Image (tube, rainbow, N blue to C red; front, top):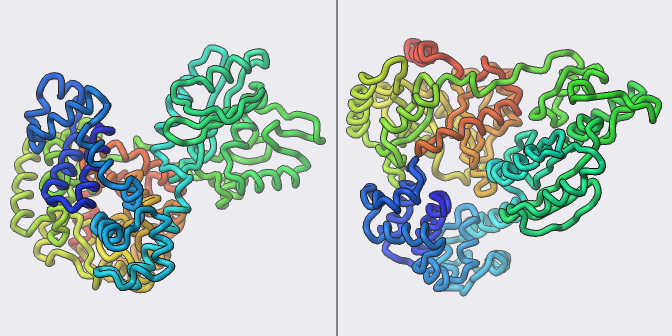
Length: 577
C-alpha cells in the first residue's frame, strides 16, 4: 500500500470519527497525519521498515503502528471495525457539498436516515427544515448538492483519468506490433472532467487479434464489456471505462482527429469539408466520396482543408476553425514558459512542509521564485496567521533568502475576502507583503449579485494583486460562488488585478471558458498550484493544460515573468497608490 492509499484511509477515519461524535482532537490527528504522509518524499514502506516513521513529527506510536499494519497487510483492523460500526452509506453523504459529518450524524440519529436516497426524500418531504441547526435554506442547499453529485457521478477528475490511462497507453505504445498509439477524447483535449478513456492504435490487420488480447487481459482491467475486430471495451479496476480502437496506419491521423473531438468541433469540420466538396470522417479525408487524400499526420489533414494545425486543447468549436483559416491560432503557453510559482502554503498555516522545504523543492524544479501565501487570521481552521505571526514569518523568509542565489522567496498572503468585500488584514499589514492574493473561503452560497459585488469591492483594494480561485469551486464536489465572470474580468482590467488559474486538479478555477475573454481584456492570469505540500508543486502542469485550453499565451501569464520583472510589476502597483 502506497502513501496515497494510506493517507486516504486516514482521511476517511477522520470523517468516520466525526460522524460517531468522537473527540475532535482525535479526528484532527488523523487529518494531520494524512497530510504529513503525503508530504514525505521517501517511500512509506521504507519509512516503516527502517523505523523512521516513528521519528516524524505528528506521527505518534499508535498512528505509526497503524501505518505499519496497512503497509504490511494492506488492511487495518481498527479501520474495518470503525467502518462496520457505521452504515457505509453515511460516508457517501460527505460528497454532498456543505453537508459535513456533524449534520450527517444529526440526520442519522434523529431521523434514522442512512442513504443519500433517504436524505433526498426527507428533504422533499420537508422533514429537515425544523431540525435543529438546519432550516429551509439548508434543506434546499442539500437538495441542490444531491443533484450536483448525481450529475458528476459518471465522470472522473482529469488527473484520476490520466493516471488510469497511463499504464494502458504506455503498454500499448511499447507493444512490438503497434505502429502508433495515442490517447484521445476528453483527456487529449484536457477537459477538467472525463467520462471515459479513448485510446487508438494502428497496426497490420493480421496483428489486431493479438493486440486486442493484450489490451483486454491487462492487469488494470476488471471487466471486459465488448471485444471485436476494431474495438474493445473494458472497465478498469479504478471504475472508469476504457475503449481501444485499432485501424490501419494510413487512417491513423483522421481517426485520431475524430475521436479527439469534441463532437461540436467535428461537426464544424465536416461542414467546412462539405463546403470544399470534400468529406471527412474517422475513415479518412475524401474527394468525390471515394478518392482518399493521404494524411500521414493530423497537420496534413488540416492543411488539406486550408487550415493551420489546431492543437487538441482548442477543439471545442470556439472559433478555432475560423482562427486556423486566418492563420491566427495562438502560440499556446508551455510549462517551460513559467518562471516562478505563486500561492503556496507552509507549516505556518495549513501546509505540510516548511517554508524552506517548499522553497528548495521549487528551486529544484527550475523556477526562479516561490510565492509564499499562508492563510490570513480569520481562517482559524487552517491556522491563519495573526499580524504578529506574519512578522515572525517574514523574519524567517528574510533569513532563508540569505541562503539562495538566483532564487527568491516572495512574501505573499492568501488574504480572505470577508462577506462585505473588505479584506481580513488592515492596510498596514497588507503593506508588509510583496504581493497579496485575495480569496473567498466562506459563505459560498451567496446570491450571484451579492457574491459578484463582494469580489468587486475586494478587487478595488489597491493592495490586491491576484484574485485567488474566483468561484471557490471543488470539481464534482462543490459548485462555489455563482459569479458574473465578465464583470469580474472587466474589474480586473480596470484595477490591474491578475486572476488566478488555480492549478489544483480539484479546482482548475478560473474556468477555461473565461480565459479567452480575460485575454481580450488584457487581464493577466496567474497559474498557481495552491500547493500545501512539496508534491502539490507538480500540479502546475494541470494549470498549464487549462491555460492552453483557454487560448492563453506566454505573455498572458503573470508568472511567466522573470523574478526581476514580477518584482517590478508588484512594486509598480504599490508606487501608484
